Image 1 (cartoon, rainbow, N blue to C red):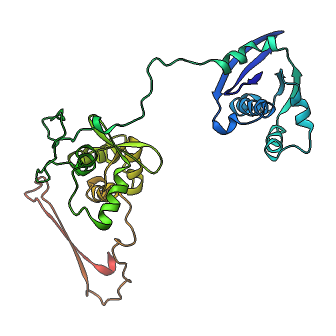
Image 2 (cartoon, rainbow, N blue to C red):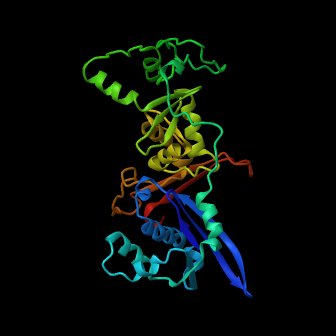
Length: 321
């Protein structure tokens, strides 16, 4: 069973066992702005598509009896000159063994409740970011300094000054960064729009639409260790480690370069990683030498004393080696 309203679609999956209908799954979802503009018949067919996509694993290879209170669905399924979008949906439904049956509106109360159910949120959502609520952050220190109640400049000469100080100071107190003219000014004004201050962290809206927390330089090594060198990381290559940092929700302006340098200095990767052709030892041809012309010497030790000896010296003639 499924149904559609002006703003949502709902579906109920049931199985008949010994003349008794058992509910397996209830599902519903809201419609986006484009789907809300569909006609009522198109919304009903959209609800059918939602139901078959949601319950596909249950319905493939089984006889499906579909109950609906919209009688026009039968006519629409058999219509050959419908809209291209509807024809595409109908073609997708042909892989299922479907039988449509009419159902009274009074018997469709469950799906009606699913698609017309609204949860009132007592806490209003505030997506705005007014400038009067933004404060300039102080120098980050290991002691855990907090932001002051009033805007304050971040001093650039401090060793523990975060790299993102200009992206916080400019929106909060209109403090211009160095070389704020020409192309640098246009570039900075374009970039600063993607940064948002949410006490006590700064976030950047990345190209995929997700917000990631900007971290100072002293936290970079710990994040890279967790995404590359920890027990659950896996010692991945540079690009994979870079992707895992993004998945963890962190961002800084030299991510890829720092990840590459961290992996280059990783002891485990250097010992057990694959050797590229660029770093392989040169392969030489077997030399044709005269008798007793080339010798090989191996020297090992110290070992535990045996008969007063601690070292082993092996000298082998190359031809018989």
